[in-house]
Image 1 (cartoon, one colour):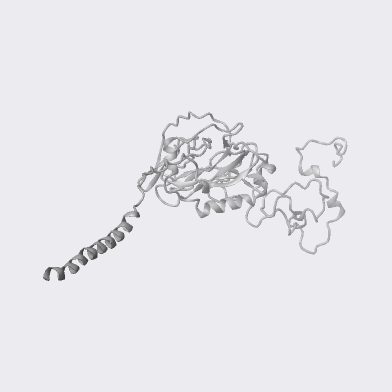
Image 2 (cartoon, helix red, strand yellow):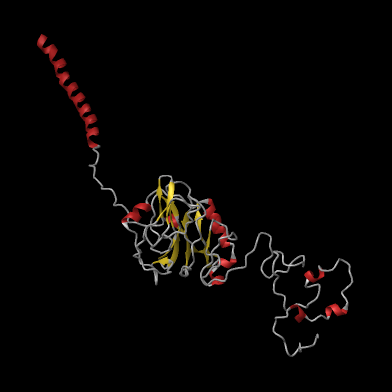
Amino acid sequence: MSTSQKSPFRSRLPATGVALALSAATLLGGCVVATPPPRVYAPPPPPPTYAQPAVDVEVRATDAPPPLPDYEQPPCPEDGYLWTPGYWAWAGGGYYWVPGTWVQPPRVGVLWTPGYWGFVGGAYVFHAGYWGPHVGFYGGVNYGFGYVGTGFVGGRWAGNSFAYNRTVNNVNVTNVHNTYNETVINNVTINKVSYNGGAGGVAAAPSPQERAAAQETHVAATPMQRQHVQEAVRNPALAARANGGHPAIAATPRPAAFNAPGVVGAHGAAAPPPRGPGSPASGAPHGNNGGYPGGGAQPNVSHAPPNAAMHPQAAGARPPGANAPPPKTKAQPPKQQHPNAPKNEKHEPEGRNQ
């Protein structure tokens, strides 16, 4: 009897265990199905080939810039100024000359890399200049005065002072004392080509040192340099179509000092007459009609009628309000005032005044 009563209870235990085992297997089976995909290693992309930064490109032109004008360098005004060579810029559908000038750098230890034109993709693009610890690539253009096409041999920093190489720089030792003389070996063909690449351009590529300099931290042109460019673009005489490639203002002693003493014109240029602040432009009439405003010799008035209105210096010899001189005074022949002048036998016969 006891045996027959325990049999049903024992038969239900395995069924319950089997159900629990199946439930656990189902739960575990759902976790095993979502296996992650295997990881595949991807190497980093190769470094890009060298190219000038896009921000350096300022403007594009369809025509090649004119040859560089031939000019002298004005003397360095004082210690600490660095030379920035002149170049052709583009505005208003044509080229204009930005004069070379002496500039104060933005900080100690930096050098100027000039801008240059390069032929790229069927057009001429201008790569802007910049300040940096080393001189970078400027197209191989020989700007002169230490910029022989690659690098810079016009001077170097010695601590917080800049030393000037007098071999290639116009330095007055009275004003500038930190100088040296070092022979410059120019391996670049000296010409006046002002652009890189294209037909007739300079065939030059950046060296490894120049590529490294392009990756350094740069400083853009200073506010005085930007003002210098703005003064140039507003001056119609600096347009290439007006000066034929020979600007009368080829270099200045300081930025934007286009009318200051020491301005240098290009060889073959017609220099404009000197003008002071407030002076009338060349060929303009004098407002007071009272003589040449600058004093000294008068302008040429040989074609003007000889009367007191055109010759106020003669009127100044008489008191204001006085009557006109008697006719005998006006009839005095001018040859008596110049006894050594050659005689005109036709109008001044000898013995007339005896």
